[in-house]
Image (spheres, protein in one colour):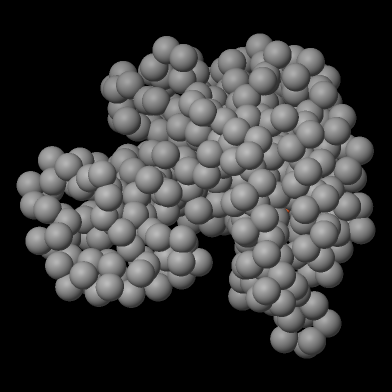
Length: 376
Ligand code: SF4
């Protein structure tokens, strides 16, 4: 399995909580970036020499800020130059307010078969509060347009734990989202990242977040509600109809290889975890002058690969397949992590069942504590 991730680091506006690599830029900066990106695509296509890739994910930033022509050009180059497996998953992240018939038509014709729509909330005041430029009506219009152009595999991103968000807001939002019948939900908890406006506001005391009981209530409501509608909880933050799990993200959670193309993109390929510098102008300048943008990264040795396989795999609700771990590393999980596993099982945070080592219900809430036990 080899995934391909392509980063489009442009947004119409910076959201208050966002620490993703993205900037607000004019059309010539965007166009120059796309020319530079086309060179990196060509470079990696040559490096791969026809090796089969299994998924393509175009994320951001806001990929749908590109024009229809730019989207079409980018996706067509990627699918022409890389050797994707037949029926491969091709996802584009979309912001509801930026979707137009022309962009949907261009994406559908270029082979996009999955859209991940950043709905985030179903209350206009909450959307405004977090700095989103779309409205609830834009979400409805977006979903309708996506379906109109024949793309039926739709993920809705939602954020729980927003400032001023009540448990009842979350419940009503999730119900409204479910009424749209997407194939997949990503329900992320708000994380305050250093350097963001929300981080500053929080420490000034002007950002009121739901208390812990309310935050837990949101997570528990989601865990109970979505499975009743047929969405199974397959990763800490993700729910899908059967067979509609994100194939691209499963590559990450199974700790398999993926390329990261574009400014600030991260990749893991041939045992090297690498990333391009998160600087649109440097990235563009280098590729336009024929110099591959400097990539920094580190070689992943066998021990680190085992640790990462555990930490990423435990994010999956089914857990880590003990036989697959043995086949990959020729040693069992319990031999490598005997003390950590025994301790976490005794504390009720992990369980070993049916050949899988997985988080318990309590372990899901204390995921970071569990993951850190697998760091050597
Ligand atoms: S749209 Fe997404 S990437 Fe852009 S600023 Fe908002 S959260 Fe960040």
